[in-house]
Image (cartoon, rainbow, N blue to C red):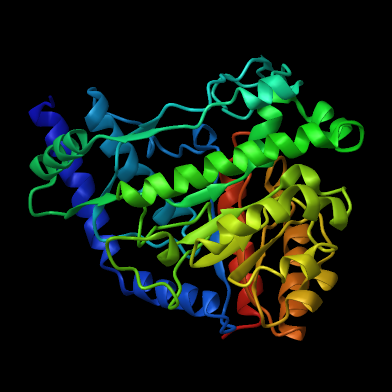
Length: 409
């Protein structure tokens, strides 16, 4: 199952991780993130997610030395956590335990993605996709199946026992569940392609209504099954790249839908009208949102002209603001009622690091959010590439922290 050498490697990494997880900075950052989600303006949290790890190695810090699959999984967790703390720490928070995600499977909706791909970098999972249309008729849509979820507690017990055997009394082991993540307009184009969907908003709206109705029904079934099967997580480390801590949610087990976040978005709908967005997205999502405790909505799409409609969500707490939207319009509408979740522009780290552009962007968002009384955060994500220059992210963190220091002492 594992060798003596592998155990030694993992235990040494675990000791380093445990020491850092006990650092008081973790508690301070957790409390600050919670206060921000409680709509108390504080120094903003700065996180980095969706990192091109295959481009980030420095001095073999990310090189795995274990051979067996289970040992390598654990090694990767420790090495990338330690790397974050050393090189791109920002407001990284390390949990004082080793997490194991509960095992489950889903039967799916009966379709498999059918696509052609174009790969630029074989080590990068970010590639170009051309999706073949499999939902172009009402009959095909009506033929979609309702997924059934199956849990595997025996597998969970085996994985926990393995981790405990390795880690001993160095670090506790904890099972973690899932968060609610519903982005049907990210999924539907994978069965159709983007162009057919956009055309059918005008030419065949009845087909798209049938499609989103089916995806919404399946999502509701998934949510209820996850709740009944004990798959929900009461205390997630992150919610699709954002700090999820909030006083409104009890964080107690067993987690129920009413005690967890709902994460939603419709990224391909940036340029459709608010009226059409409401018709094809919001009206279908609202009943699902109502099942959950708090809602975080928005990702890479611009929501500046849709925030008035978003305010109809009674449990909305956080709004994603992309770098391609009008910051003033968003901050003015968000005010102190919601968290302004800003996503800095990843293009600034993709080639040569654009220090001046980063300083300008961060300064602009800070001033704008302070002017309008917003609680806010920075989460750099969707980092497709740093062109094998890990120093770009290191410089980004340094630049952002220095800029924030000009406003918070």
